[in-house]
Every structure is written in structure tokens, then in C-alpha cells.
Image 1 (cartoon, rainbow, N blue to C red):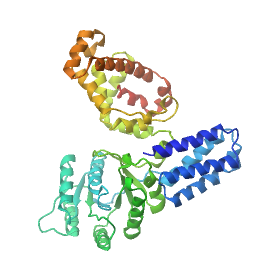
Image 2: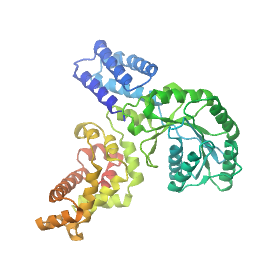
Image 3: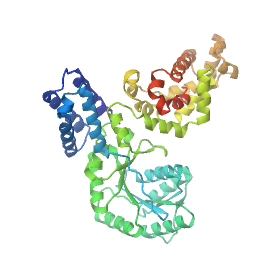
Image 4: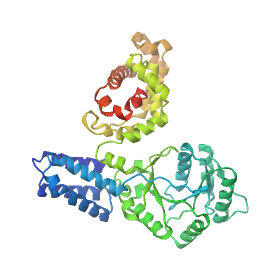
Length: 453
């Protein structure tokens, strides 16, 4: 996400660094390029105008123009304005003083409401809450059935209702009562959608709002629809009073215009983003981290959080010790590859790394998931002795391993070469090289301890 915008902004800053001195003229030229980059990223034109005016006002000050490194000052100003545009700080969910807290999930049909309800339930469950779900879409039986399947997959309760509960309001009230009786502290209400906004839909949602008194009304929008998502969110807010937004399919949106516009247009915070199809692919939205990613600074904090949530800490520490003591075997290599896969698509992980110095260009690396599967198959075809001591793997053994894994001898040779390089690289990272020095303060040693692959 934001790849095109990120590349264009970095070119603007590179040109500014090439100037001997920052002047009003070359600053205006840079602002024009930034404006075009934002418009091409499908950012709302009013938001672009406001953003450019904010940057201009701060960048044209005497302090910036006379600074020793004016380009760096401009980058800081652009970052500050991006954060302001995106919402200044992460907006957390609110909860009622008396449980259960009611969270209404609203939006147009096809935006990903039902899947987002399941993802949010899982997120809440992983963060100390005990949620229950209910679908009040009485018009599409498939919608209620879909939520039931999701509830079963994520192993969380759903209120299915009784045969005589045919009205959304009855279902919602019964679900809230059931949640209170079973000790559930959050009830997620998946509402009906339409292909477009109409009076009947708004009347129904207003009735639900008045009856349930929800602490949150979250509007679900499809990032791929760009400014249509922004327009729909604004309309829902004017007529219903939404409290936040979940933007789905962010991983497929190369431009990012909806994410960059929606806060400024609606006045309501972007609370979560969907970054994949799996139920764990929902992340809280952090404006400062997103701004850093757009400017090529990476999103290391989110990566650390993802690693700490997924990687077993004891195993990570043990792996770090093995790396330092040069005991990192092929079996460890395979296990770490499996651990890394739990973090999600590798390309998205690489995209979180800072695009500077030796990391530059990482986001453009294309990861072949089939190659990873091949590596695991090759190591599985080795004997325990071969995994512990790769030096004994001679020509005959390589041919046997290739046959057993359905690969070629060349594939086996490539794996052994990659393993040797990984050992060398990981040892340098854990003993204080560039990454260790720059990122060690942010617990990156833990991350690399768990990322032997």
C-alpha cells in the first residue's frame, strides 16, 4: 500500500537534497510535485489543498529556509502534516461502563462488514475481551449463515436467535440480553447493507442505534473503491453519526487515497485496517506509523508487535543463543521459516522495513511462496544427522534428498547455499552490526532471534 505515493515523495526529497540551498522557488516546485503525487494517489482534492497549504505555511518560514539541512526539515514538516491528515494519534475503541458494550458494524453491501465483524471479534478476544456476535441482516439468509461459519472458525459465540425473531431490533435486543447473561462484555452487531444508501436502510439503522445505545458505530469501507468509500462514509456519518471506520482490502490498494482522505472528510477516525483475508489480518490504525511508511521510514513498531504476538519468546531466545554460538542447524532454519510464515505474507513484512541504507529496495523484493514450501520439503527429506551437520551432505546424499523432496539436485545446492548465507547474516545481526546498533533499542534482537530464515 502507498507504494506509488512513497516512491514519488522520495524523489521529491531527493531533488531537494540536491539543491545547495532551499529557496521559495524550489520549495514551490517541490510542493507542486507533492500535490500531483497526492492527487494521483486518489486523495480527495480538498484534502490535498489543505495539506499543501499546511506544508507551505510551515516550510516557508525563515527557520526552515536558513536551516543547515532544509530538506530534512521539509521531510519532518511533510510527516507532521501527513499524521495530522491521518488523525494525529491512534483512536482506540470505547467501552461502556456497564457491559456488554454494543458495537454496531455498518456499511454498504459487499464492503466486507461480516468478515470484519469476525476479525474484530477475534482481535477483541486476543486483547482481553469476551465478545459475542449477532447478525441482524434478516433479508439475506446467507449473511447470517456466513457469520455463523466465521464464528465457528474463530471459536467465538454467536447469537442465532429463535424462529420468531424475524426483526433486526428483536434479534439485537435478545443478543444483548444473552451476552449479559453469559458474561460476554462486548456484543458485535453485524447490520444489513444495501448496494446504495436508501431511506429504509437508514431508518432501520437509526432504530437500532436508538434501541441499543451503542458505544461505537463502525463504518466498514472497501479501500479499493477509493473516493466512493470516502463519500459513503461521509454520508453515513451525516445521517447516522458513525464513531469510526474500518477500511478493508488495504493490502490491495496501491494508491491509498481512501485512507489518506477519510479522516479529513468525515471528521471521524480510521480505527482499523484489513490487510488480508485471514481472520488475524486486522490491525489498529496508527497515523504516525503509516506516515513513516509513506516516507520510506518503515513501520518497525508494528513489525515488532506482530513478531512478539506470533513468535514464542523462549524459542526466540534459544535461537539467538544458537546463532551466537554457531549452533544454528538446518532443522532450526526450517523451524524459523515456519515461524516467519505465521507473520503473514513475506512481502508485507519486508514492506515494513525502513527503505534506507542496506534496506533500500526491500519492499520491491518479490517472494515466491512456492520456493519456501520447496525449502521445507527439502529439509524434511534429510536425516536428523544431515540437518544437524550439513557438511556431511555429499553428492550421493544430495541426489537422495532431491528424489525424496520431489526437487532437483540444483534446488538442494541452492538451499545449502542460502542456509550458509543466512547463518552468516543472522550471526552478524545478533552481534551488533548495522541493524543491531540502529534497531537493538527497539527489541529487534528479539525479532531476529525468532527469524532465523
